[in-house]
Length: 334
Image (cartoon, rainbow, N blue to C red; front, side, top):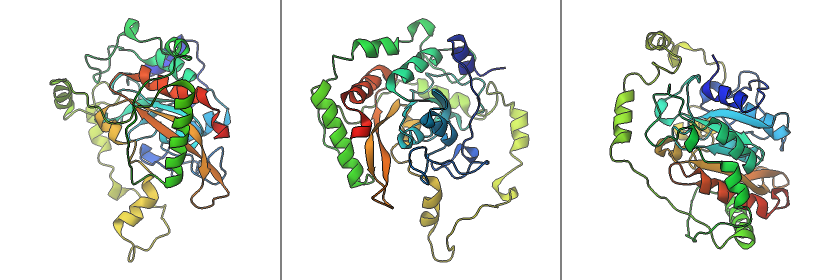
């Protein structure tokens, strides 16, 4: 049995080239825990390709495949594209159906897209955004097939219209100064070329009670039922715990002198700007904005990415902003 989105891609004329490696248990934002070997950044030798969908990002970044699909539990389809000069989309919760995927924790688990540009991303989203009828995660707002917007045509129609918005000052202490400057410079190019401003800030979206009903429904069977993992089989799998798995891979640290936070910081990666939207369910689009000097060696230029977040099921304005920025200036020149 093919996963639902695999069937949709094949029906739309796509060709499935194969599968790519990802990080162990899909829980690393770096790219050094894969079973095969560390995954290198295709643009910066010796630097991370991001995670957890590191293999797919590497292949799309090198041009060996045109499009990529991956699962996201905290930034897995936004961080690798951001580091590999790609476009990554984590769509609104339950917009893309999950049957056929091996699931992680259901409330933060998503299917995401990796492409070379915004238009390819929109075309792929058109093919796979649909209610299939077998996914116990879908909700009232999830569109049926005839309700899915023609994302690619909307972008082409709006190409010369630009985007409108307003400026809001925002300070994030976790951003490096060079990345901040690059982000502002990229936005300025976008504003000057195609629009009258930019939109920044948090907008909450609540539904009276559907989210609470959905979460309650999942309690006790989040990894069973229709996720191709029968509950009785999952209970058998639980017998294998972290205490029973040999720890072959060690890090260069001193357990006696370094704190737990210091030791963990070497393994997790940068998730602060991505994982909150796995919890809230908002769509997040990562686009490349240029290159910045690497922190370890200023002579090395590494890719820098911008994340665009919108309200639930507002992938259209999210993509419009990204499309406008993408067409305003060629990212390799920034």
